[in-house]
Image (cartoon, rainbow, N blue to C red; front, side):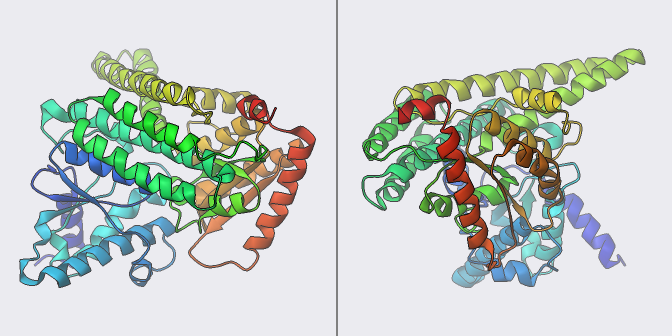
Length: 457
């Protein structure tokens, strides 16, 4: 008879991995509202039933089935999937079949608890009768989020392209929101507009993504931008500019970060959050970088078998990164002809920034290297303040803070740490008000550079 631990290990091996998505309902966590909906639409374009999970309503469930030592996003996503499955089970009764659902939960390697989410959540799901039959689809950073095995082989490349385009367009729409809302002609019109725009672009992805008709999607996006531009009141002067970095889920998940961007806007700021595409590009860049390192090592050892594999991987990830950056630039350039939004950072430039400052290294594969590099880049670009968002007790977030806080103090650039764990911290509002006072002073002394400065002129 197998022990409980043996059963758990069997389940981890059999029920987490890459499973074919067709004829199942794929459940996508709502890390970022726009990105999650556009990704689900891209999935549906390939005849994959996909829906976005309602989020943050099941937080109590997530906390009930965790110890409190887990990363906060783990509690959120666990609560989301448990609430959905329990609701479906109650609604459908005897017709509820757990095997009809696939829970989409990627993972990351390196020293971060994110890599353990799906393992822990697998164990929790297995503790509920029937939920043990809900498989977890997990893409991993170790192969650059390869989609092989989840869809027909001849459609993998097209599927990957469509999903990346969904990420880029979602980033642009987010930046459109942050560009318009601080300068909107009437309170609330931007939020209403973005909600309608998201559904319009979502429909365009569902209709055109599988065919690779990205020009049609781009035309729809341009129409959205034109409509949004008309909501800006040109009489409102430019405001201080704040950049946000940090743990990817928390800085993008509005409920868990207590709508931080809106709070900063209400205190008189314009905000730019680091993008989701930056993380995807970083994963591809990291695989290319690691294979170059392995190639040099194997060349020294004259290991020709591994050299051949390294070359294939370098070609694969190199071409992926080139395509991603070219498409991203194409979309941003088209939109920038209509409205001045901040473009994304190139990951290679971020690594060069780190190397120049000699503060950290891409050899440590966590969000820390991206956050520190982005902070330095925001400072170089003349941002008036920077916020680091991360889960309470998050090692990458705390490492970022320890390294950059003295650097920002030395350069007299306002900096704020905002760790979150779901609680309402009594000193948070005071900290934000103090930070915004410093940001305003920095803005009054130094103004804003680049596009933003031209806008104010």
